View: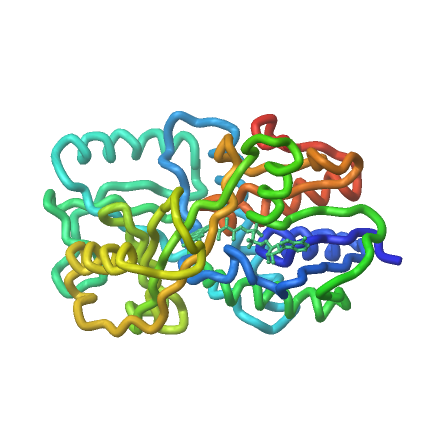
Length: 341
Ligand SMILES: Cc1cc2nc3c(=O)[nH]c(=O)nc-3n(C[C@H](O)[C@H](O)[C@H](O)COP(=O)(O)OP(=O)(O)OC[C@H]3O[C@@H](n4cnc5c(N)ncnc54)[C@H](O)[C@@H]3O)c2cc1C
């Protein structure tokens, strides 16, 4: 008999399993498709903050999660011996025009106030040509020191290894024992839609590509022309993503990804000859409110849900795992109001 059964072995289910196990609970994870079969099996992995202004509970929660990430992933790596590809390497964004420059400069002050000494948001002169940084029309860039990256697929493998080292079983099917948590991503949202007869949430398709391009182990991620460029520790570079509400097949790539790659090369000409080694597509679980959906399950009284990671599921996972463990193990509810299921 285990204390907790977790349905879904994506980043939410695995992270919550990890924190509950670390706190002494016995946990079993069940996923008929195996770990990282859904959105979490991807390649992008930007752990990047919202802009430091118009502060709200979602941004505060995300900041806490980003600040926890280093110790979270270090412990996972040490326990299981598998690297999640985490590093807090920061982020560079080109500044397109004078208006954007003034705005970026004003955010230096709000970042200092909101992020305090934890991280900086600053406007810097673009470095010399030949350095890993995006060309900038104004000659200036935003640099933040809060952004980090993981390799999503490797991060899930690292959690699986750490859980296995702690004796947690990850199985294809099981009966529910103890408390039950549903972290079933898009399938879980669809189940609620069907039962309620209205839209609670759905999948937003994203396509991304992996290039053989080694920007260096400490190279910052870039955000240019609304695209993320994520240099991974293994000498690959992820570029993403599309955001598609309408699609026929959630898991195939097409001309929209070619368009992303063309825009990426226009923004970063140095990538022109880099071979594309993988094209990947997945469905982001998006709730109607766009916020995570946590707490008591809307269909199963007494059971729990963690869903709605949408575009920042990896960034939010460490803190979500903490608040779900607080709730399930101690009955302590520290959930932001807007995240309640
Ligand atoms: C192209 C793309 C780029 C992205 N980039 C980023 C990024 O840069 N940074 C970031 O933070 N996030 C990013 N995301 C979002 C992130 O991937 C998701 O928010 C996150 O993976 C959601 O995790 P999850 O565990 O909720 O869902 P999933 O990973 O989808 O996991 C759900 C799991 O539940 C299982 N399941 C389904 N039904 C059942 C059942 N009945 N019983 C048991 N198990 C079941 C499925 O098999 C699946 O494994 C991106 C997503 C995409 C698609």
